[in-house]
Length: 234
Image 1 (cartoon, rainbow, N blue to C red):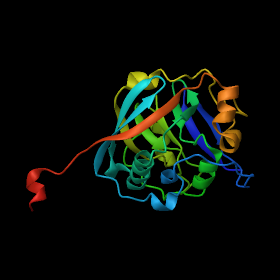
Image 2: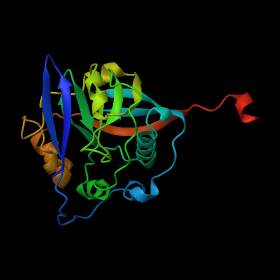
Image 3: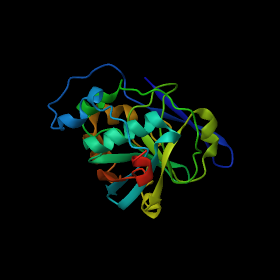
């Protein structure tokens, strides 16, 4: 199993573990997912230097502004996930009030299996994990795939651990704050969803055992910042 370790400062440092799925394949069920996001090898387009993505969730809408120079590999992966339609019926499966909300495991286990080994290289940490920033979760060096988190608070202690933010919520942070955190930390350390089961069973497991989770309904690229006119004619 892979384990993701995040240290958060809530008065004192506490270690939390995020357990991902076992690498062993399970019998696959027929997938109804769009081919657009089931082949990571095809989703490698370079992101614009600056762009915005809007997320429509069960709590409302929020907008993320991405600055590619902060974390190029992370920005590229995020851009391709959004453009491909990956973020549809995606749960905020790990929500810890005062710390962060985590999402990105696909609701279809067959899709999750496709992305499990599709890791991107690490980026140097140029920004800080302050309130509202968005960052990829990791399971160690060069293991970022599809899981992300948005910081509820100033979690700058994560900066020195290699967590490289690539954007920030610029509209709708009040919506992010309302994402349901009643289940808290995931199993086995808490009463929330077990990541191994999320990977293996998807939304069938989540909607049965954790009916009050919030979900991403869709995500779209909202705008791309173009170079100034003078820059275009140089």
